[in-house]
Length: 371
Ligand SMILES: Nc1nc2c(ncn2[C@@H]2O[C@H](COP(=O)(O)OP(=O)(O)OP(=O)(O)O)[C@@H](O)[C@H]2O)c(=O)[nH]1
Ligand SMILES: [Mg+2]
Image (cartoon, rainbow, N blue to C red; front, side, top):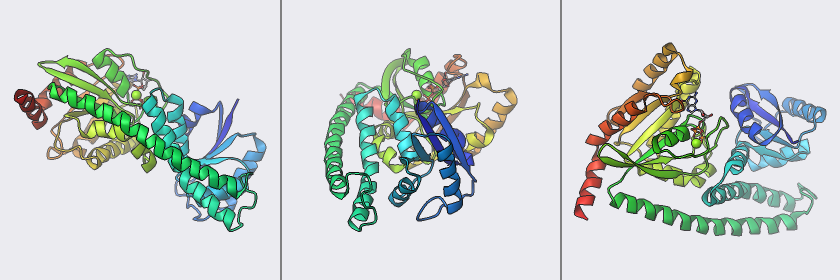
């Protein structure tokens, strides 16, 4: 039986709870107001620090998470004050990903991201120990922290080399598929939107799906014929709000699969509340633009049609149209249920339709002809 205390702003509580429940059998929450102003040196102001201390005294917890990005200074201060291991949002996300990681690539990516996240923290500890601010802190004392820091740096550079090797293999396989005239279509979107369920439905694969966040931790490609085309669908790792840079880099493989695709299917969950749906839509489109996915086809798949009433689907659909622009992407919007198999033919037709005129196809075809 393990337990965690989550300290999060009200608007983040639901997401934080869902993530923590993957790892802990008992999770309790201290809700900060949405407009909570972080103390620059200590994160928690004296009032909130006292409240959290009381809560920690009441229940027995193995770990505390602040669902925000903490500076190394915050972490050392909070560990010292609260006398419990305190981690931030990045570490929570990485621990959930680690729990779900199956492939070697995912495992390496996660370990690397975790270690990289620790480096500034260790540097801060070393500096403070040297200044005598943290006497005896972390048990082993300054020297052991120094040695661990060196170990972490060496391990990160070893993992980086291993990842590069794995990525070269993926790039090579991808290049081969492109030479054979295959069209790559990445299935992207927020975690839990139903990407893997759709990937399975389109390809006949049987990848794990589930209501937990971040079920998928590595990409997978599968080729299926679609009309006269041979399409390689790619299942990807889900987006999560304000994705931290350490994770973006670690999951570079997913982003690369997206940025080099001939088309993207953006899966949106219509059972989400309107404000959440809107944020996820804007964020997803922002990510696509930031990784350079523009000028190529985009299908927005409004998924989980079976869970929403007609009225709310119409409302959500009306939010999508103004966010898209024909200059950025030739697009189509389709309503589907990946789980119930509703309108998957509609999605395939829309995909063929946008791909037909797309430059990506012309490029691929001419390359094949030239071979
Ligand atoms: N009712 C309903 N549930 C769906 C539908 N599509 C997916 N789900 C459910 O939604 C949950 C998440 O589905 P996944 O396919 O794992 O979602 P994902 O986008 O791959 O999620 P991550 O891998 O965590 O990023 C699962 O419990 C699915 O059964 C749908 O059309 N209708
Ligand atoms: Mg998935």
